Image 1 (cartoon, rainbow, N blue to C red):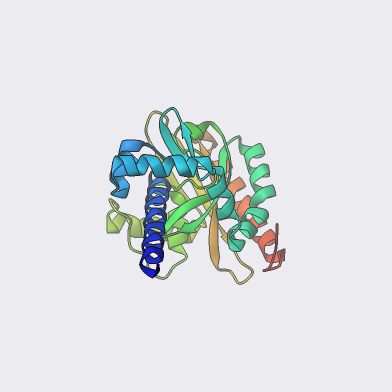
Image 2 (cartoon, one colour; image 1 turned 90 degrees about the horizontal axis):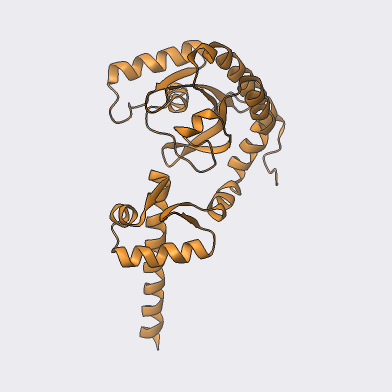
Length: 244
């Protein structure tokens, strides 16, 4: 009997480990098909398919046109983490004002497992390049990452970023209080980011805006700074034990 119980427990751990490997891979790539997810998670394709279907049944992932992405249940559970819930509350109204005044895709993002993840976002034209929805990880070297790194005494450059260029970007972010990054693909977009601070001045998140018309970047930069200041003020007023 004890051996049987141990065997069942081990099997349960194996299933959970496999499910979390798939969720970690989805968090990394945002959206992918079965073959890509199985390979990235290091699981047999049949095992990955079974686990993904089980996760889909409980809302852990969403399946659309043969591809998977993070589901509403995982996003909701992530938002139940108190620090992130408080950030979402503090940034909610400033984000709406920022979107209305700039017409940009806007978001508040914070570090999760060493990468910048969107906690709350409002879509715009730039969503064709990068979806501004909760749970999406921003690509390495983004403006939000620069702002967070600039608040640290020392930060290593992300993969593919030359140390000299990274140092220059951090210096500019400290000097101007914002960071800007330009993405070129099917659509060229410019992203600007500004820090959200606690009442002690610690940078804990970033508010950003993405515009596809570079002529609007200066106005978007000023509006983003203001939104970040408002979010910081809201955050300072929220109790540390805030509940939604």
